[in-house]
Image 1 (cartoon, helix red, strand yellow):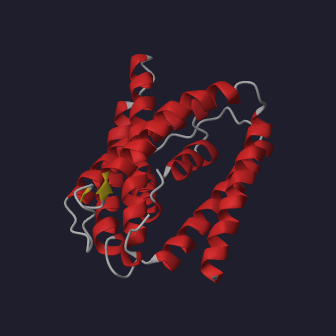
Image 2: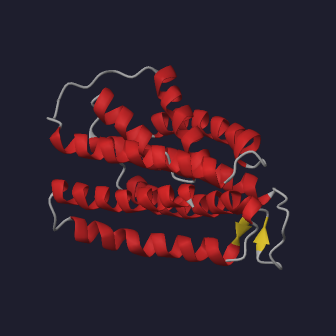
Length: 231
């Protein structure tokens, strides 16, 4: 699309985060209206996630050091972890016993999610949901709700930060910082429109079938990233 190769990663992450922010916002509005929003956990985890994501964004991501090869390695590693956790989750037997979670541990989960979100442009939800559900046996519905709240907070703050960055190439008035408005808004609209459709379609399939379809998609992306590294 004509972006400078030296900053393609920064543009990719910044605009991906805008789409992530709008996706999380629409989900959070629905959860708040249903009174299924967990304010305490979201605020604590979101605070840690925001601080760590901003530090990572400014000290690592938005620097000449973080180029395409390093970005692809991070994405491949994260997607492999997601695929592993997804497949393992289909075989995990439910455990009704919920372990209490200390505020510091909640913050630690948020910090790790924030760092991975900054490095990949993804929301970090896989870390939050995996930790809460698989380690602390938090109900999946509650884990997803907390994840959406944290993702919105961290992606919103990072998007604001990216507006004040100074890329090498200005894209003829279409961008402010690393945010390219035509691209970011189209991505956001697609996510907001497509998400409810995906939910409706998913209701017709079993959890295991959905997991296998999702993992297949991840494999395609991983192969593409590997080919980029080799090329």
